[in-house]
Length: 57
Image 1 (cartoon, rainbow, N blue to C red):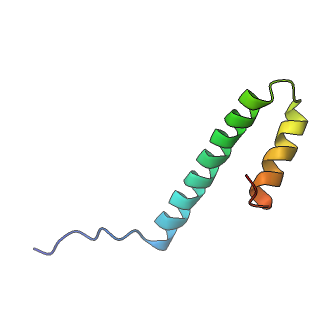
Image 2 (tube, one colour):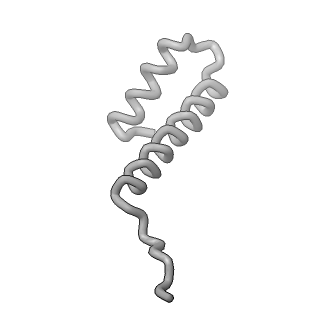
């Protein structure tokens, strides 16, 4: 009996990466909301996108 294949397929890797990205955005969104509670949803989304697209924290 051969050992099970533990290496994820390319599709699985893409799905995992996508889930990690979504989770990271949710965490950053919550952190920004906590830090700037007076910001509008639009301002929060603008800053969230800026930080992700410019890789700025």
